[in-house]
Image (tube, rainbow, N blue to C red; front, side):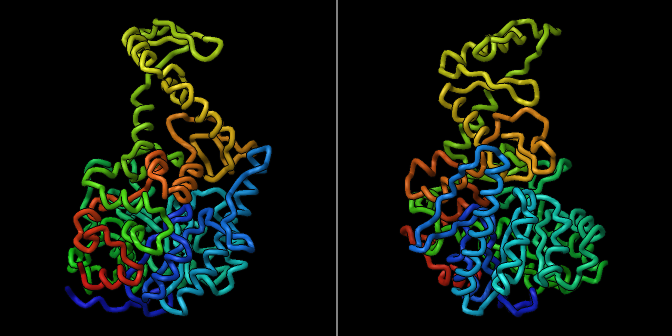
Length: 470
């Protein structure tokens, strides 16, 4: 493989390898600090990160507020304290090497407020902000206020063009790089547009080339593009390295850093990664954000799929074929199904799926009584972790903090499940019952000889391996 030379990014010469930020509490100060110490860019998640008491014990994020608004304020306080804790930890471990970035999600609850408060207190601990999950127009303004570099995460040249014209052209000098995140192969939330087919992955090269051409029109010939999603062995990307057509390119690794000794995930999660097979990672649209996302098709994901499959349309009055009466809820209020759908409902009820929950789309889903109670309890306990949530109908943008739509029981509380898997994944049952994000190359752990016999490297060993190209 070609020698991987340092590139200039964020005002420094660094190795063009980046740790992808993974929240909640998965990319932390320990993992990112060690990645930076190895010469690359370490990225900690500023999404409800962990903080600790005076004795070094993790502070559980428990909410006591009686209202959603009260709990939202508690969430903001946890988020700011946790991000600062992880920033200090990463900075100290890096020892002045590499770069430390903070990753935020633009559509997380109070994103702008949280990152502003973090940067006000972080001083020189954070060299850059990476941000995706939405269109972060205000990212450049925040970066300019604190004189830090910013790295928008986009999935098309068109998205970057819109961001540049509306905002980024005013703060070009602090644009440290542009993260191109492959919308088919990346883990976590994906930037697929409505015009793109989720089942037909496109070659990233022409899409990144199109991005470079747009950037070149604005004089950004030397601004690095960071390729994220689908990167495993660099010798598979050799034609991207020192390619004059693409310009300076760095490579982001999100899934591979999960399987290191410094990774905070539990042993059961690490062992599960070593057993994944091709096709085990599922591109889905269950997220309460409304975005596509990629996750392991475990028991959690299969239960969500079952909910949506046990779904029928209804009307509140007899209309057309919807003439079969069915009673919903404790009072058995009548709605109308087709005769065929009512027969299907009877079959589901015989299997224990006796509770009908209404969706915003005039459909019913059928779940067990225990699952119905869990869904309703999670909706009531909402703490506003997203800017708006289709599962609970929270919205930070509206006066009444509601989207005005019925909560959607086909989705889930993302804060609850990510906190659970982050802190309970020594338990195999927790790995099965929670959302487990992964890039689509996660199955390669099982076949990559680097991980033979269950070997789990340190971050330093992983970076050294990546630099060999294999």
